[in-house]
Amino acid sequence: MSAGWPEGRTRKEGDRVARSRHHSARAEHHQPAYGREAYGDSYDPYDDPHAGDQLRGGGRHGQGDPYGGPPPRRRRRRRGGRVFGAVVVVLLLVVVGGYFYLDSRLKREAVLVDYPGRVADTPGTNWLIVGSDSREGLSKDDRRRLKTGVASGRRTDTMMLLHYGSGGTSMISLPRDSYVPIPGKGRNKLNAAFAIGGPKLLVQTVEEATGLHIDHYAEIGLGGFVGVVDAIGGVEMCIKEDLKDPKAGLDLKAGCQTLDGGQALGYVRTRAFARADLERVENQRQFFAALMKKAASPGTLLNPFKSVPLALNSTSNFLVDEGDHLHHLVRMMWAMKGVSGEGGVTTTVPIGGNGSAAGVGSYITWDKAKASKLFEALKQDQPIPPDVIQKK
Image 1: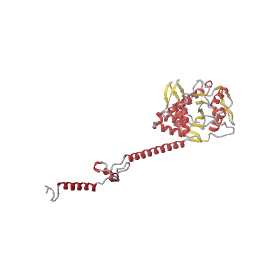
Image 2: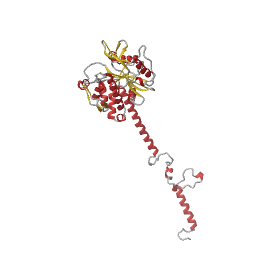
Image 3: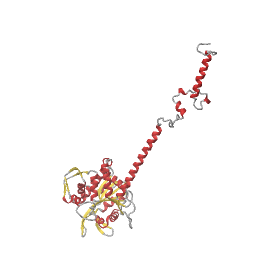
Image 4: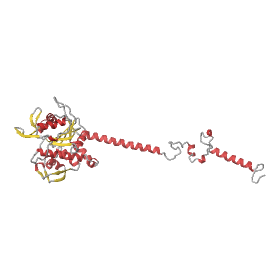
């Protein structure tokens, strides 16, 4: 008998039995993964750090661990994508909702109506932009401070034709004292058309006098003008000489300076010049171009303390045609912003002379040949010939 072994067994037999028991125990607790036997693979789960996961059924790629393991990255990415998508949807709803809210604040009137013999549509886009002297919305203190007087009704001292298209962008002043035929009313000053029949008759008068089809209409009153200027923190203008006009409430020194709403209103209204209305319309074009340039600048659009008041003031104070919407006004603003850039032209209808008539008073006339040449270029959406651009 061998030492340490039961009677009747040799050492070799004991070793063989022990190995047999050892392998049996391991086989009972750790069967190889399904399918390994068919390939004769001597699989040992103790040598595979992921064997436990596979036996639990959680080792396949892209699946979660039913035994409470950490969530896989793909699930976190999906959750993050849902959050991002929700944020985008909310932002879109805010933008779309804001657009329709602002669009609903615009005042509308049937201005661009058809009439017998109306000028057919012409190439490019034509805006008639009007500055009304309506005191609507101004308190007694406002009227006193801004020197607007107490006149009722609607008149206009500012009329500009904005054209843009393949021939470039141009802004042409139509002097209020221009002596033109007013449909059904004989000849009179251009602003008389507005006083007699409002924007509808004014548009018809301008179309027949110029041969251009007006596509859009925009009108802003005195109070709205002041509000828009103040909303963006004023507009910088370089004044050539001292300006003092008590009637317009204006007292400015020469030099570059920022005009607030009240000063700006006086600046575009004053006629205290040697050339009276002709110089005033030049100042109006310069100011409106500077106003739109600042309104469309990143410093205004990206600043909610300026962009929000600007949007609210603009939409509540502009009167447009029934077919005009907020995006049309934005396009107009962008065109006016670039009117002084390369390819842009600002001018006044060529003036031929002046005169006076009973019941009309003093008026000015257009240079028929040059005016026809200017309007024909716009009618064909071509650049304005240099020889018809009025020099300052």
